[in-house]
Length: 161
Image 1: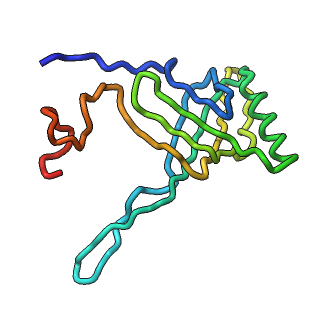
Image 2: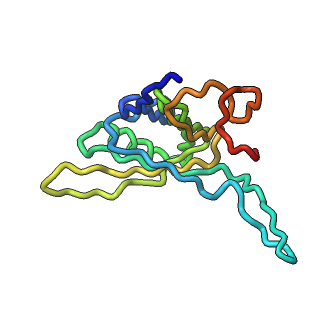
Image 3: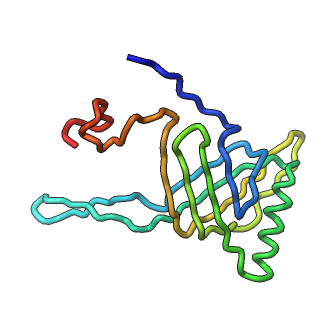
């Protein structure tokens, strides 16, 4: 059996907002607005599930206070306040892995909280994606096939799947 080393590198994570690559970030967080499925309680203890078709999510990005990215994002917010038209695209990609989030309906919620202290701090910007065209949470291993491929010698799913 061959072993491989799976590698994560923060420098390979790219966040592109309407063609502008966000650099100098400390961390990026993504959360879906709701679960993909919810349980529906039925009569006599027979339960089912219901699919949530809402693909929206919230993306937070912490940018060092000295970065020009703050100026760019501020200009986007200012333009949106003037024209109500800042519909943005968002592409978040892990270049060494398979995680990827894409939206054509994103917007900045406003300005971040501003803190001045004795140390350099980060500004937390929040983007809302009204929908996502792709929402893939992956790892950094290279799969040899699909998790659903029963013909493959490797299975990534439980045996009852």
